[in-house]
Image (spheres, rainbow, N blue to C red):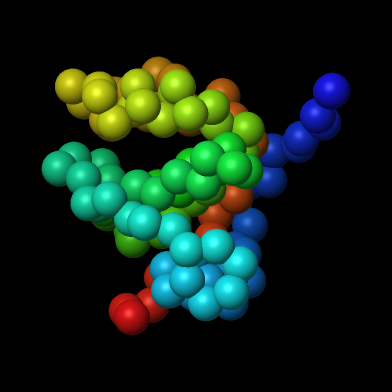
Length: 105
């Protein structure tokens, strides 16, 4: 099966989807893991859809990365520096989408 995905740069997604991700309000409940990182505050992963969610520390923006294999997710979690791992193995390697900022639950 060949999957054609195009990169979607700097597009803000529907806030209702973000609420669903954060609060479990309909589609799928995501578990956000806090990260000790200078670049990220937290991460979530949807294994069924192979989507990585990253919340950036400086801006609070959430990005999702499509077609992200579970092995890469585990490698990200195990990395000594998640910021360096992101720069070397994620940024520019996977299609992504910028989502609306999460609101406090």
